[in-house]
Amino acid sequence: MADKNIENEIKKRRTFAIISHPDAGKTTLTEKFLLFGGAINTAGSVKGKANSKYAVSDWMDIEKERGISVTSSVLQFNYEGYCINILDTPGHQDFSEDTYRTLMAADSAVMVIDASKGVEAQTIKLFKVCVMRHIPIFTFINKMDRDARDTFELLDEIENVLGIRTCPMNWPIGSGKEFKGVYDRETKMVDTFEAISTGGAKKAAETQYHIEDQELKDLIGPYLYDQFKEEIELVDGATDEVDLEKVQKGELSPVFFGSALNTFGIDMFLNYFLKMTTPPLGRMSDQGVIDPVTEPFSAFVFKIQANMNKAHRDRIAFMRICSGKFEAGMEVYHAASKRKLKLSQPQQLMAQDRKIVEEAYAGDVIGVFDPGLFSIGDTLTVPGKKFQYEGIPTFAPEHFCRVVQMNTMKRKQFVQGVTQIAQEGAIQIFQEFTAGLSEIIVGVVGVLQFDVLKYRLENEYGCEIRLEPIPYNYIRWVKDPSTDLTKLKRVSDVKKVKDMKGNPLLLFANEWVINQVLEHNEGLELLEFRKN
Ligand code: G4P
Image (cartoon, rainbow, N blue to C red; front, side):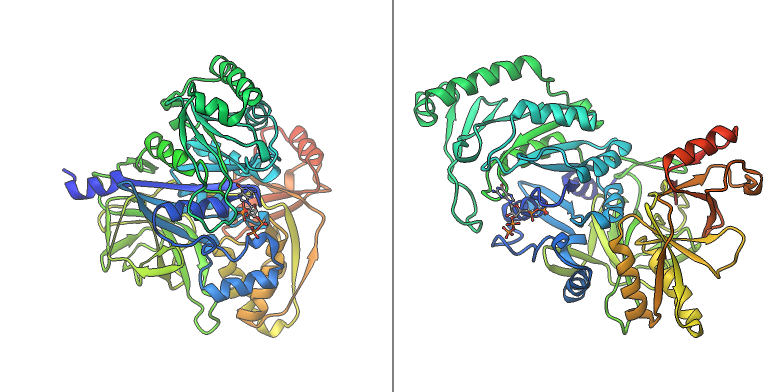
């Protein structure tokens, strides 16, 4: 029997990530959510600036200054009886690996789209990860106060490019200077829009009218009103009904229009979102689905962040609680090291403040001090339970460099540095298939991570390195690790490497070469990503 209090706490939880192409308004939206929850008092306190706009050294300085940057943290707040965890993700695409992993810890995702730009490259990439997990995806089409693309066209694009059905929950009336508000299709009420001059005000001025209200017709003018009515007729006939089951399986995305900067459409979004999403659900482990309510504490590590303080090379491991209740000082079992341990200094982040957590529940994320024990994907349970959650996929890096160490006397520091940074998941390291540790190849998803690697090896480990780009862009894991790579045909343009666990991989210059190798080696199976 589950403890009633634990059950109530878990039922209140909603844990989601916000994804977007940089500049679509993710940070602004996050901030407005926090304003609603009363977690912060003024706009502008969440971010300095999206880190996409910084050079790498600035990025490192920001991280240092803030300890753990807000862009990579978890924000918790209460709203209307719910306890909401927003898993924030870095804006810069070179850190998208981080975002991928964060999505593994989310129960749903909010996709922010710039109304004038539509679906952009980064959205597509991140979206694919959500699809893989079958989590609900809600769409917020932002910046309606700017000239937007045609509403039908935007929905078509989401359906065609992302391959998910859409159901508009509200409908915009005009855009840009002519933006008059949004129509709630369920209540048939229109929230009218009046822009605010500063981002600091809590909310844009808005008044509600019924769709047939004469005052509304007068307010928006006959031309726009008729056009809006026509659109509504069309949309009622042409778009999918709200089917909650499909939404929860991630097959249908509810779409909302608004303006984050003007705090317009945010409450409507939040209210529907909270109603249409579920509390944390059971998660798959090697022993079947683990129920969040009836099972005691369990969690998995989805992110490791180095402490930027050079004097202490300690790290923070972020773990998502999947079942039960966490209490400070409790003993947990770490399956990977087969050790019982106490999680030290468990922390939770609330906007910019870190606080020590006394208790946390399924759905929450806590950061704990990591003496170098944890790896991404590790499961923690109460002693006596020995299941493991499904691994977190490692995504295929797209850029590769050979790492040349400048001072060979510092071999130990070098190996330690590279290994630790790889454990954090910022880089992936490979070795020449036949050689030992003499040649290390580093693969990254975004090239900025090379700079971060160089910077950190120099600053934290005192090792100077040179990075020599190598001409490969594609990596594939060989599905059957016992495959004899020396027997493969048509591999003169292919580099054979192994990861730190000894798994064989192949590096390719382009997709054509991959196809050639597959064609000439019957039975060979190559994987684009691997689960830890
Ligand atoms: P991101 O995290 O997705 O990268 O986007 P962010 O929130 O930083 O927003 C990017 C820019 O878009 C910011 O302007 C922000 O003020 C603006 N913005 C966000 N929502 C809206 C909206 O609803 N309407 C309009 N018109 N603009 C919006 P910036 O000039 O780049 O930065 P800032 O100086 O305003 O912070």
